[in-house]
Amino acid sequence: MNLSKKVWSWAIYDWANSAFSTTVMAGFFPLFFEKYWSNPDDVIQSTYQLGLANSAASILIAAVSPFLGAIADRGSAKKKFLFFFAFIGIIMTGGLWVVEQGQWQMAIFFYVIASVGFLGGNIFYDSLLPSVASREKLDFVSSFGFALGYIGGGILFLINVLMYLHPDWFGIANSSTAIKLSFLSVAVWWAVFTIPILFFVPEPKNKNSVPLLHALKAGAKQLKETFNHIREMKVIGMFLLAYWFYIDGVDTIIRMSVKMGSSLGFEAGDLIVALLMVQFIAFPAALAYNQFAQKIGTKNAVFVAIGGYAVITFLAYFMNDPLHFFVLAGLIGLFQGGIQALSRSLYARLIPVGKEGEFFGFYNMLGKFAAVIGPILMGWVTVVTGSVRYGILSILILFILGAFFLTKVDFEEGERLAKEFG
Image 1 (tube, rainbow, N blue to C red):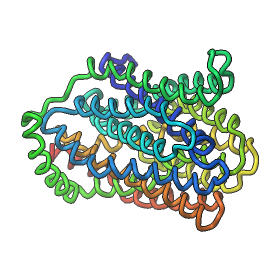
Image 2 (cartoon, helix red, strand yellow):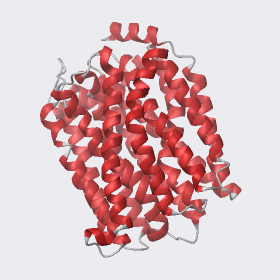
Image 3 (cartoon, rainbow, N blue to C red):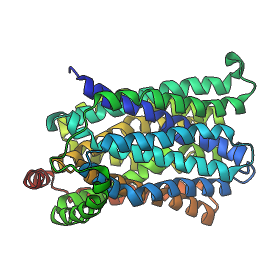
Image 4 (tube, helix red, strand yellow):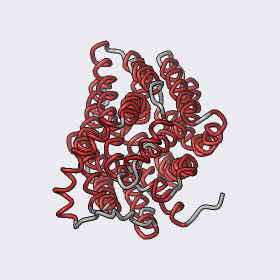
C-alpha cells in the first residue's frame, strides 16, 4: 500500500515518543528506580512507590484530557497542544540526568511530569488519525503507527541496552552513567522525530473555529455537549467502559512488568532482553494482526487479544524461571500492538466528524483513569498479601470485565449514529 507523506509523518510520531515508553517507562526507570533512587532492599515498598507514580501521572492527564480535547477542536489547535505536551515530556525526560542516587522523590517528580507530557501528547496524536486516514484505512494506518513505534522504540532501546551492558564501548564511565545518558538520548530522539508531524500533517479545520482564548470558554461548553452526546450515543459509552477495563490491564503490564520480574528475583539483563523481544516481535505482529482482523473482524480480533492477555496474566502467576518470562514476553509481543491499534481504529469509527479532539479526550481520559486502577491494585494487593504473584493475578479481573462489556457494543449502530451527529 502506497502511503502519503502525511501518513508517514503522523506515524513517525509513534516512532518518536515510543522511545519514552520503552527505554524509560517499561525499561530503565523501573530498574533504576529500585536499585539507584529508591531502597534496593525493600522491593515491596519500591513497587508501591512506582505504582503511585504511574497512577499520579494518569490522574493528572485524565482529569484535564476531555477539556483539552474540546478546546483543541474549537480552536483548531490539536498540533499546538501536541507540541506543548511533547515539549514538557522531552524536557522532563532529559531532566532525569540530574537526579542523584537516593533522591527518589525528585525522580518520581520528573517521571510523573514526563509521563504527563507523553500521555497528553497522545491525546492529540490519536485525534489526528481521522484526518490522515479514510475510514476504510483506519485499521491499517493505526496499526502502521504502532508498528513504527515498536521498531523505533526498540532500536533506541537496543542502543541504550548496549550502552548499559558495555559502557566502555561508548567511552562511558559506568552502567549507572549509561542509564542516565539513555534518558538524555530519549529526549533527543523524541524531539527530532516530532518534527515531521508538526510540518507535514495538516491541522483539521473546524468550520466553527475560534481564537484559542475564546476556545477556552467554548471548550467548557463543548465538554458539556460531549457528555450529552455520549449519553445519547450509548454505543460509545459502552465501548469506553469496556476499553476502560481491558486497556488498564494492558497498560499495567506494560508499565509494571519489569518491576514484577525484578521483584521476583530475575536478573536485570534477562528482563532487558525480554523487553527487546517484545519490541521486535510486536513490530511485525502489529501489521500481521491487522490482516488477522480483516479475516475475522476487528471486534473479534480485539476479543482474541483480550483473551490472550488474560492467559498471559494467569500464567505469570506461576513464573519461577527466566525462561518463563521470555515466553510470556513473546506472547505479549504478539498481542500488544494489535489490541492497542485496533481499539483506536474501532473508536475512530464511532466519532462524529469535527469532534475528534473532544471524543479522543474522553477515550484517553478513561484509558488513563483505568491506568490509575491497575498499578494501585497490583501494588495494594502485593503489600496486603506480601506476594508479588497475587498482585499480578489481580489484573486478570480487568480483562474479564473488559471482554464482558465489549460484548454489549453494536458497532454498526455506532457508525450510523456517528454520521447523524457529524
